[in-house]
Image (cartoon, rainbow, N blue to C red):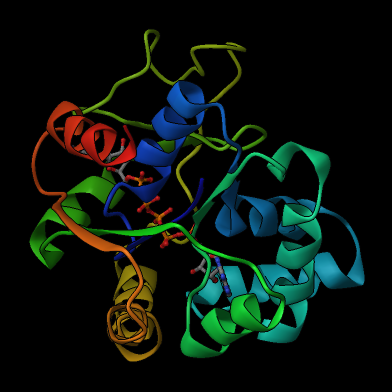
Length: 210
Ligand code: AP5
């Protein structure tokens, strides 16, 4: 089963992707997490990537497309994978088609701007694993610490009001057109109301995958 999760920044893609990965035994491929890791590396590429992440703009296609296609060609993706954060614009969608990557379902998490601002401002992340929490909605067992490793959680640099505004602009301009791209090509496309609780959203996604 090859899946794509689409949605505004902060819609809950990463949170649901972690659950889908666990319950369906397919790897979650988060381009945001991959890029944050590259951005932390002390290399010219890392510095370049970090500039895009900090500004809320998309990393250029020539950097991310090759990384993604290489990642899904690995052994652990043979039985399926879940793309979280890719494709992000029409050119990336076309790049998947050109690479002959077949997609079984596209799941769109629909949510309002007001709700995502609340979600992103309370988000805390364990950077090495990408595990995501929320100080109220999905708190870690111990305040400020990752449940599995006990390591410190951080607030993402791009979760500040100015960068969130930029990320939303980029979403409307570049990512939202993908909804029509997939609908018009006859892709198996599902819209889920992501403004509900984590478990309600999870249950609806679970029904689609059984
Ligand atoms: P990326 O990491 O992909 O960020 P995003 O798409 O902006 O999405 P987020 O990670 O912010 O949100 P999410 O939908 O995963 O929500 P989450 O589950 O965390 O990308 C970051 C940057 O990388 C981009 O700006 C770009 O620069 C670059 N990039 C990435 N992919 C790229 C690509 N393909 N091409 C070019 N550049 C790329 O949930 C949010 C919060 O809400 C959490 O705290 C969570 O605990 C909480 N929450 C989740 N679900 C619920 C619920 N149902 N109820 C209440 N709270 C909830």
